[in-house]
Length: 139
Image 1 (cartoon, rainbow, N blue to C red):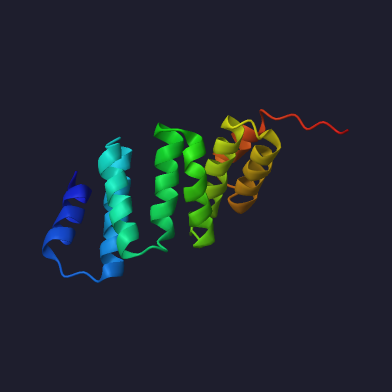
Image 2: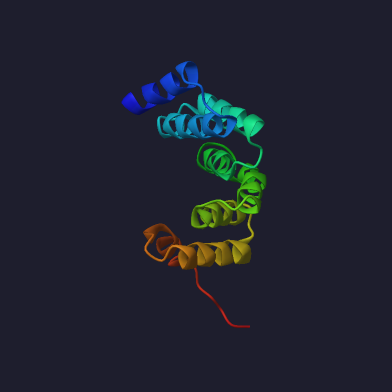
């Protein structure tokens, strides 16, 4: 709870640059997302994007919110924006896109995105676990 209070304090009482304010809104949104306060988290990500439309972390976290708590297909445009704006966590972006593609029945695309996530972050277990479910057949 202290982290959320620190974000609130910074946003209400500190003179922040617009970039720092956007980053603080993203951080607060992430904290709210972890607590499943979806509407508040989404509002923070949107407010960050109004200040900094190229804020890749805001786009990526909107994608995560949609993939995890709403319709995964709705995450796709946010993933695209996160990748377009050079997210610092591309493995997560490809993983989220893989989930959305799989839910949409685009199995080959999902497999490729899980592979890409695995290649970008070889130590991350989740892509490897998801890939175990796939069987690749030669024509």
